[in-house]
Image 1 (cartoon, rainbow, N blue to C red):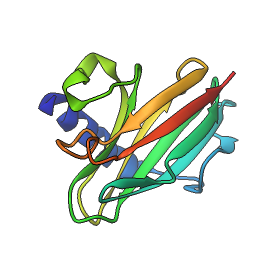
Image 2: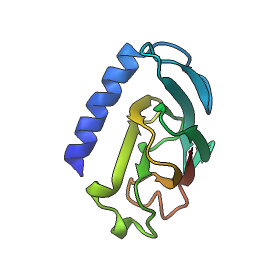
Image 3: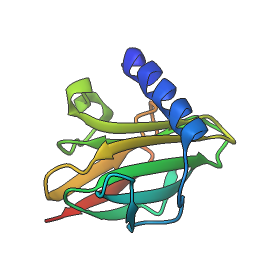
Length: 141
């Protein structure tokens, strides 16, 4: 999974450098320059919670999640295709999107909203999910 984290970190660095537009809160629909809708979600990560922990977007939107790490440990925001019960259940193939942030920094990820439904969000840094660092991501159809 470290290869995936490197790729995600590079993508996050590019997003931070090239970011423009509203970095506002949950569910802000704005134009993305190509006529499509975009949702921008700002998340704060600390030990061991996401704020907010629930997110709702519309199907067919491009979603940008920016994770601001206000904790003292590395955190990430990982959107899963299928829910898991323990860290042992996580596979690379189950990850739909991931934003990584070192302490005091931010990381972003942009992805198309998945199919309508309810999805699980976790921090997959060892021990963080077990400590309760998770959330809910809903895509309205």
